[in-house]
Length: 492
Image 1 (cartoon, helix red, strand yellow):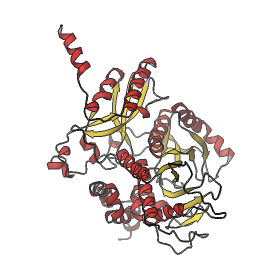
Image 2 (tube, rainbow, N blue to C red):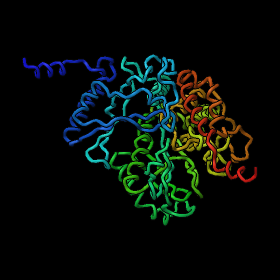
Image 3 (cartoon, helix red, strand yellow):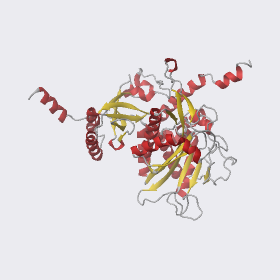
Image 4 (cartoon, rainbow, N blue to C red):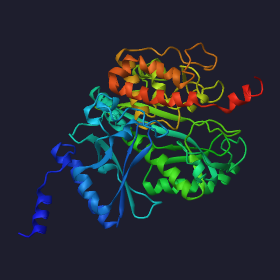
């Protein structure tokens, strides 16, 4: 046997990392084989292997198509320090100490972790020539799951919900801003850490909710987004101009929890990339620091479905009722744990500047029947299979996996303990109810002491998120703001 033949024989018979550790079931293996055939038939040249990091931002590696079969078998290596960075990309943990400050031997010295593609998430990118895109799950080289994988956190939450006899259905309603890119700020002095933000201008003036004239001004940019979503097979339902200048809202058909979170990761990435290629800047930042803009939110519509019957578990039997008893318990759980959950629904310092009275954003922990001023809005009623809860506290920058997982655990706790949400509010900004956290600092204090999330997510994961966010806050508090300079520079 020639040397080349011996090499081929070893490759053909070698047990790969994925098979060795049982990381794919038979259905996933079959999907992987179909995917390799699709890549060959469509002439795909590169595949972007991606995971959503701790902040929900997609990162990963790009492989030439001929190498992708090896990645399906053995995974793709990445440095474990990627899990230990804050939103600026700065490494927060001491990576060259034992356990890298996490207590995990697998993290010492920036060891390799492995991305294992999920074939069900593969898409061909319509804006990038001959390019595929696939989401990955994360493992250490000993086969253990990376405990900081946020996609795994949602999978675990869905498994707990399944054991209780329910599936989680949700719908995404997301706001964001579109701008014309005037200056990308690519000169070396702007390459700070993080980099200087780009200079932009508006695509439309004024506050004109659902104005057809404003929509038409935005339509060339919206057409790019609409066609991109269609090219990706995303179930886009509506796309419209929102209340603020150059603000957009999109909604999607409802679907199952993991698929919806995966879709949000892909959609945000697609919008930003397609817009940038066309001289635009899209941002999912909640409240951009530009004059006369309006905050953006991410309203999460959610319901439980009984696995045995397929019936909407939130739909009441009693005429005139807003929710079933289980739906009321679930809503009560969302309200009970809203302070700690805010770290997941509103994870940025900026997002808390949206919580203002009479602003179409909530400022307190209250629910209402079809009331857009309440944090939890109950929609539907007896005989309506679309009955659901809308959480209006989220921001569009939230990590989708953590947002959804936080809702499942909080709502289930309300069901388990039969919590009562109280009466619905007709005047949510005037009702005497506990306030939402006014800052990420307050939210972190609630998460740090949350018995629910420490039990549901694990002590290590909660401490991990708290550490990352505390580093972000420390950088924020050490920076001198424009407000301080205006307030004190001339006075003192």
